[in-house]
Every structure is written in C-alpha cells, then in structure tokens.
Amino acid sequence: MTDSRQRSISVETITPRILMVRGQRVLIDTDLAMLYGTSTKALNQAVKRNARRFPPDFMFRLTLEERSEVVTNCDHLRQLKFSPSLPHVFTEHGTLMAASVLNTARAIEASVYVVRTFVRLREMLAAHKELAQRLAVLERKMTSHDGAIRSLVTAIRQLMTPPAPKAKRIGFRA
Image 1 (cartoon, rainbow, N blue to C red):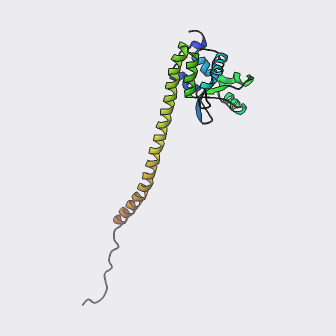
Image 2: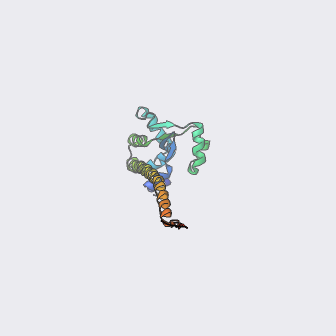
Image 3: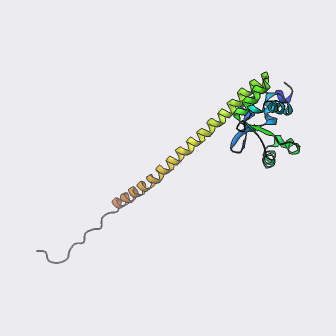
C-alpha cells in the first residue's frame, strides 16, 4: 500500500474532500478516482460509456467560475487550474453509480465509506438544525422570562421600601 491511491479509506479521509457546489454535497472526479483506485481518465471514460446512468442530479460538470473557486479553496486540487477540461462532480447517488460502472473490488469497498461519509454529514447537519431550533426556543423563553423577572424585582423592591410613616395630627382631638 505504498501507492497514494491505495492509502486507507475512512470517513475522516473522505469528509474534507466533499465540497458544496450548487447547494449540493459532491465529490470531484479526481478525488473519486483516487478513492476508487483508478485514474481520473478511466473514471470519466466509464462514465461516458454509461452516460444514461448519470442524470444531472447524479453528476454534472463544473463551470469555469466553479472550477476557479474549487481550485482556490482546495489546495489538493491546484493541478485542476491547468486542466484543459472542466471536471465532473458526483453527488452521493452519482458516487454509487460510478462504483457500479467501474465494478472493481476497490471501488465497491470505497463506495461504502463514501456513502457513510455522506450520511454522517447529513446527520451532522440535522443535529445542527435541531440545536439551532432549541436555541431559538430558549431565546424566546428567556425574553418572556426577562419581563416576568423584571416585574418580580420591581414588586420585591416595593415590598422592601418601608411605608412612609403616617404623620401625627397636631391639635385637638374630639
């Protein structure tokens, strides 16, 4: 396992390679090829031979602007800057379909980890949404409690101030 393509696959090694493009979590073709133990050219050829298996929600090509942004934000993709063609990106379903068209032991093994990574990211996102909702509820409660606490403090202060002494009348009493 000295070849860089044969390094161990884990959710932790895949997670930083998942990018957000057009509101979707995707893997770029060079990263997917590395994970599946093949060349980018071989991956793209297999995809091209099976184009009907890759609708736009499974795979799409980056625009020039998107490629520039990816190259700028991801140091490991700087070689794409000089590539004559625009890279493909694969959604979660596209990564599975790519493993099925490659049909190698390495691709099948790696696809399991890729799917687990996508699921883990989805769960983390759901947990963050739930946490944000709980914080919003807590803030609303605090706002209503603040008003109640203020009125309670005002009432306590009123009780703490001694009543003004009644003035004794001066003069004749009948």
